[in-house]
Length: 120
Image 1 (tube, helix red, strand yellow):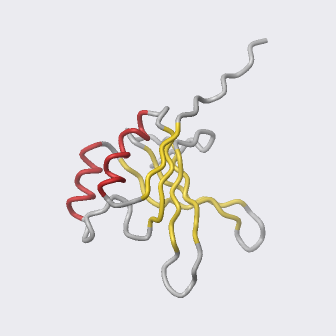
Image 2 (tube, helix red, strand yellow):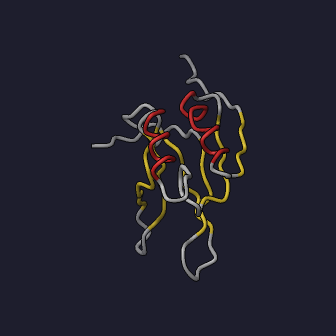
């Protein structure tokens, strides 16, 4: 079972819809119980209930390499990805920067340390 920590965000990707719709979706990159992390699409259903759907997860460097080698288009996250934003403060985000660039995605890296809880 994949467990995801929704409180932390390593970055996000913009994905264009498939078909006739001309829409962009934001998929967030979160820590999970794997070495790299999981891409989760957050949305609200028709009743306004918050939902989350797994886009993909990346186990480790070997998993990333296998995905790129074995996918038909040799990209990490598919050919519908428009751009990638990664917070390189996190080593997990740094793990996929090169693979995203090799995949031809527009990659934006930024560095933002998480806020530390205030001491009482």
